[in-house]
Amino acid sequence: MDKRLQQFLDAENISQAQLADTLGVARAGISHILSGRNKPGFDFLEAMAVHYPRISMDWLLTGKGKMYKDTPGENPVFAPAQAPRRVSKILVFYDDNTFEEFQ
Image (tube, rainbow, N blue to C red; front, side, top):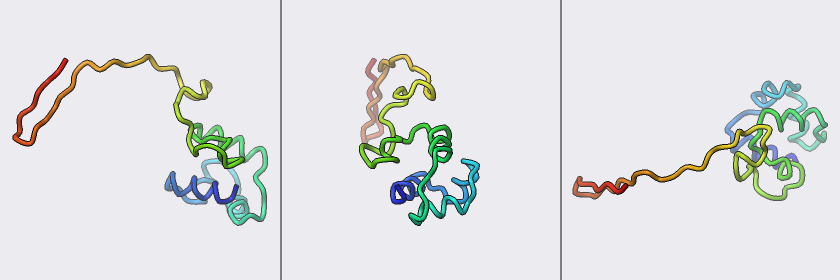
């Protein structure tokens, strides 16, 4: 899990200290998890799920699947349902600075 947590930090462009502050855990605790010295506890995992709802906990725990959930509606507790959208207009721009509009 230490490698996956580091991948997550890199993907989110956040530091170990920022993660610790966001989750409300000791900075040394994050360092110990990343070094492989300690395994994360339930409180750490719960805080990750609450503060980063897009992360796939299956991926974080087991390495299976993708880092992020495919759709926001995958976890209804964190993401409101959205009505389907329909295309109403398409604009095509040409290199001669003209365009066409399709409705």
